[in-house]
Image (cartoon, rainbow, N blue to C red; front, side, top):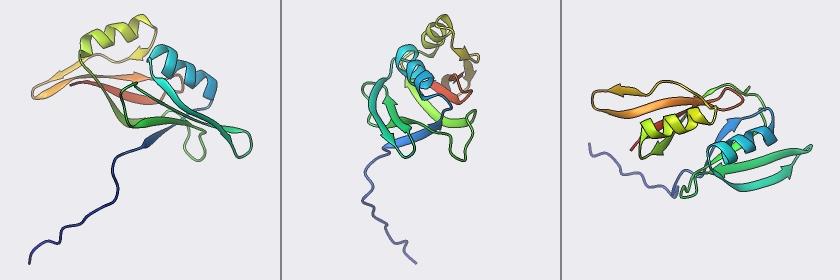
Length: 127
């Protein structure tokens, strides 16, 4: 039996969410330390903020969202791309960012983890 082709109107991944306890502190980290740009900062609900940041050339944003039912300090699964993992690792370390060692595995690009001020884990991958 032939498999039916599924089509979708979904075009791209727009936003991924990271729970943060202090939006101002998170915004400062992602913009001042990681060099992301703020794409959206809007009030909603009971005085909460919806903030989206991204690397300047990225179409996908990271929402620095109120925790809701997910507490800060999660493994986000988010992979950030860079051209030189060793150099980015050193630069982030020099800025006081909590980073893990650069990992080198056969057949896999060099990568390392970093933690934002809320303890959320992100990955930086060369490529």
